[in-house]
Structures are given as structure tokens and as C-alpha cells.
Image (cartoon, rainbow, N blue to C red; front, side, top):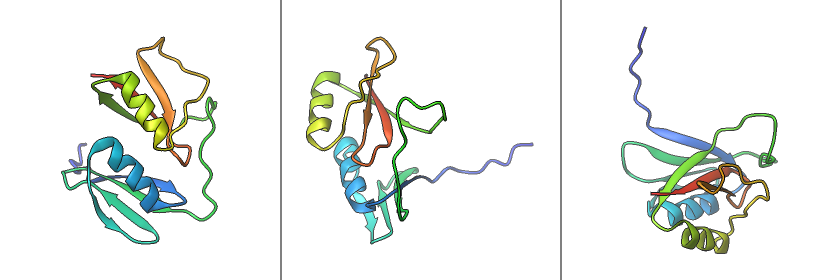
Length: 118
């Protein structure tokens, strides 16, 4: 049975919604469409990234046996984008699977995401 629901947002738990929305806005070029102390929404397309404040939020570990969701992004210049994101507050874990096909980074709150050359 197919329900045919339309995905409208991917919501990420965090401690500081606006700051994290600003980080991902720099990564994607999307604008913040709503922001308050508890929520921030990024993008105006059919799917938005959203961030919700969770008191006491702690980012996931990496590598970790427990599976976590993460976002993948295509970029035109993997090395330059990595450098730019590190300057914006991302970190690069020591463990890097994929034999150089992609780079694993963590956003300023510890959420993992990958970037790969387009």
C-alpha cells in the first residue's frame, strides 16, 4: 500500500537552530525563511532543511556502531569546499571511509555530512 506522502522538510535536532541554519545556508546557498529561539527553516523549495532546539543536545560520535542519518552534498571542488567548511566551523574526523571518493565532515554541532565531487 502506497500512501504517497510528500516530503516537505528534513528536521535536525540541535542546540542552536539559527547558528546551524546559517552554517548550512553557507553550504547550500539557501536562505533562512524562518528563525526563532526554537526553530529555523532553510530554503524555499519543495524540501526545506529545518533545525529544532533540543535542550542538552549532544552530537553523535564517529565512527559509532549505532547508525545515524546524515546528509550528502555534491560540490564542484572537493578540496576548496572542505577548506571553506572547516573555516566556517566544520570539523573533519580522522576516520575517512570511501578511499577519497568523498569527505566526511561534522557540522559545528557534530552532525555528520559528506561532500563529494560533482
